[in-house]
Image (cartoon, rainbow, N blue to C red; front, side, top):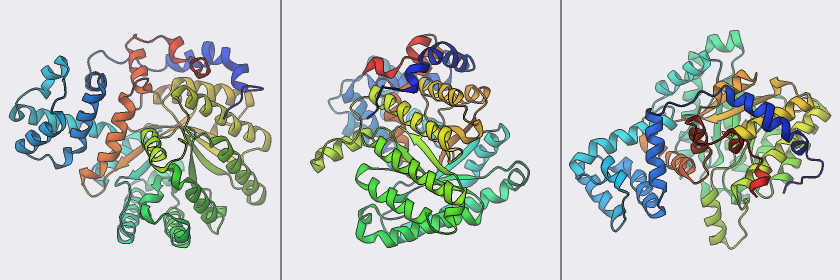
Length: 453
């Protein structure tokens, strides 16, 4: 866990809160009081007011892929909302209406919310969104939805989907690749390359083979492929498999791949030290930088439930302020490594927290880190910070999930996670929205997380 002694953050706190932070926020447009996103946020906030209501609503959303008629909706609503007290505001917004009247509103709401967080239900639709981003100087990281595969055949099919998406992207953005050096980016999960039940040490050789095939696609098309980390139980194997494959030719000398570090883990500092050592070794021997995306983590409740069921201590920080403080501390570790050893790594900071962004920018400035080694990444549909990050002179990239075969059910697990994350108490998305409407002060938004621990 983080330490405060000699912490650069402590030294720069005044700069973060009174110079870098306010300057960053000055570039974020104030959100209109009446907008589609604003209405959606209000509805989500009302839903979250009651845990019982939230559970019922998310259950209904999870079933939305199978709700294709009024009778389906009537049955699903009765199953999830039986005995649940519904807020009068939400009753007026439609939940309390007869199924025949609520059905069109429900389908429209689900489609609107899904399109807010999911980049496309076809390859063409997703690439249209990518083209718009690229024209604005924003990068992309495409991720095929579907979560975990259930068989080797499914894994092979998933690899085929990635190849089709990469081919289409390569053809469509040929001009950008040749003239602007734009390198198409993709994200992949180990559970999307190999059945989760089989992710055990005994199957390591076959797991490595599937990851090798994924990185080979990136190598063949001069693209970038990043391996997402998922559940703690599979983390050690995931990191080890990536290290093994990344150390092989041709990947050890190819800079177009990387891995994610989850900083809500209590072991995050130890893991960071191992990856920094790997990056130093690789750069010293091959003069090739390693790439890491630093994220907080997206499986909070799942990790706690798994730990309880498995009889081990929860592997994640106990509170959000602790996670935020850990993020800043470990970001500092990586930035100091670059300052000390040179461009041994390229860092992508996955965060929507203006305080975290400002802290990283202040540290990078203090340590005189070349901005070309850093970028910030945000999720598709959560892009309030993009104009501000660009105005501060940093690259920014959107994480863009897509369903290439038009199967909207592929996106339900991801969509549900975004809803849970964005409507939770203390959600940064909600706080930024409240700040944009003048309901939260700049001081609150930029507050040092250690003060909240």
